[in-house]
Image (cartoon, rainbow, N blue to C red):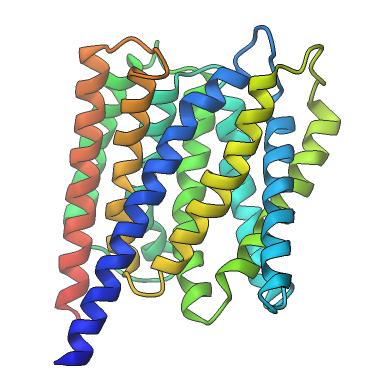
Length: 300
């Protein structure tokens, strides 16, 4: 009984950690939008990503060395996660130039639908039938959110790449953490990998700012220390005790936090039709994840 209670306590702590991480990630959308949107102090999104992830990698490397751990342990796992994370951050940042912070957050949240589908097609784990029923509901929600075919822009399409990559990241992060990868070391490795990818992309296609606004430096520092180092560390630590399906369900709160920040501190106008579309998308995501959890619980 004591062991069961201890396990429940660890799971509850992990759940709180995921929610805190989602709140931190949600707060970053309107900040990134404010930096990458063309105008005074504009910074190319790939330059922003290279600066933030490079600083994050440095911080996690120092923490790893100070704590006496090997930052290069299980490096294959960290590099794999880093490549996947590059497909999250690079399209998302670039797409933010064309779409709103709230749209970006809701579309990114569609990764919840891709988790069971990837589990089925790649890992051969059959999802519940409700997962497939939730897809058209999510698509209707996306239609309302973006304004339909005529309203979907380049940023929305790029963010769909982010959504698919997020699903891969959740599944592979769960696999690597359960196999014993150190959260600090794997964080350093994934951010170092993303930084290299972002630097290459920035050198090929980026544009240096004519004027580096002070707020840009603060945003880079914030992204490096909180959404990157703190939030991802919370995710990795929580995935030791929280099942991946539940982690995915908790990740739904990121879209809600992001929309709330965008409509308040970000100054984006609240549009009822878009909010209704976001609500439909979240309903579809909850439907898919609850069904997946129940389906998983029925297995022997």
